[in-house]
Image 1 (tube, rainbow, N blue to C red):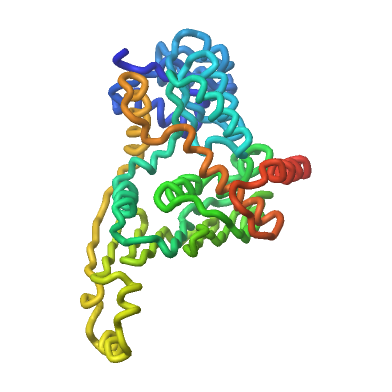
Image 2 (image 1 turned 90 degrees about the vertical axis):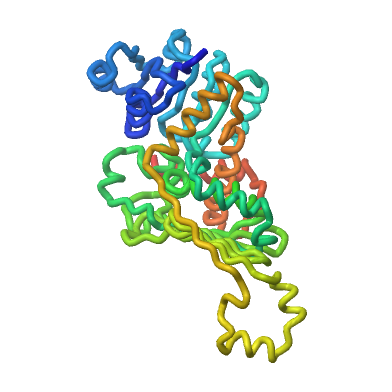
Length: 380
């Protein structure tokens, strides 16, 4: 096999983007095998834009057609695990859009099933893992360049969405359609990156506001305190109503600090001497000198790295990597089994907010599903 024939389920914004990437030849090891959508009007669009590409209104029929080797699920979140399982059952490779699902129970189901099909490729679209900036930050943490993490802070409020965005689809920003708001739609990439780079917290406490600045039933403003279980703490803030939003990540270690601004610039401050050693050895005369003009260069060395990011390039990289794993076993950037971490963290944030209490991970899955289903029923 030189090229993987991809079956795109859902020809909306994301599915359409992937189809165009392939059509334009941006993904050298992939071609469009078929497209599926329940909207009959999409058939004409496929005929015009992607001639000779088979169109299906039933994704099972497409999977069983023999026209595809793999699928990508560009559909509402609840359907990701179900569609992935149905593909794997029929020996078709599966790439899930983020998030892997709405709740951990359904993600565990596909993870467990995928483990019985080791010859098939199961991946998730965590395209930010291909971002050179975040790969560099992860590398620095793994290389102990700033020492043991003491605190993480991520303010990611650049997800501004107007009311018209939510009004454009009845399923948007609903418990029954999407399974939540900013935590399951806009911010899953940052939630994944946070745990991928810094590890999973042991406990979370969340203050979330529902329909705070938008007429929606789900969360549009979230502030979470993270407890990593070893003394280290963190704060994660996100929302969809800040038109002048901030994207700033700080990771503070005992040997320095990493600051990421706007996902474009990384500032690394490396202490000449670990903080604990400075504290144990400096007397008050040393402290006075430090604060009376010795200058920051006497304490640390600063390095600034600039990165460029081209929209679509990261998605192309994941699609290429997915195909390469199918063709020759190239290691996956984002194995599908990794998707449960971000889902569990988002579930913990929701549950903490609903119960107004600190939540320990792993969460009580039955309690989470009970609370989620209450909200789905109320909404209906």
